[in-house]
Each structure stands twice: as structure tokens, then as C-alpha cells.
Length: 63
Image (cartoon, rainbow, N blue to C red; front, side):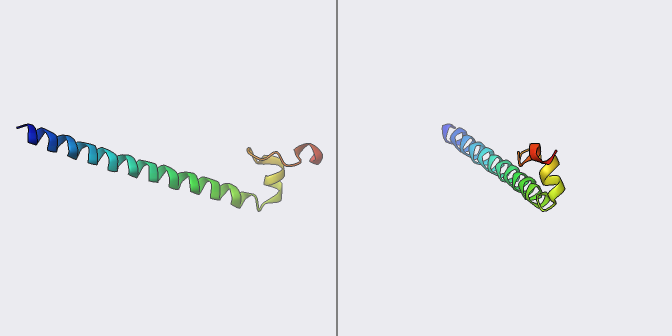
């Protein structure tokens, strides 16, 4: 009977680990897509100089 409990615990841990890895991978892909979009927007000079929320590129010099 103890053996069955150990098997159930091991299966539960493996399933939890796989679910965790999937969620981490999904979050990583979303973050990469977000930053790729951010870098693509930098091709637009007006957006880069005035609207970029992360970059402080010459915002005072432009005004």
C-alpha cells in the first residue's frame, strides 16, 4: 500500500513539474515577443524619440 502512495506522489510531482515548465516556456515566449515588438517599434524614429516608455533617448533635446 505504501508503494502505491509513493507512485502517486511521484506522478503528481512529475505532472506538476511539466505544467510548471510549460507555463515558464509560455511566459518566456510572450516576453520575447514583447521585446521583439519593442525593438521593431524602434525603427520608427518618432516613436523612439517621443513615446518609448523604456528609453530615455534625448527626450529633453527634442523639445
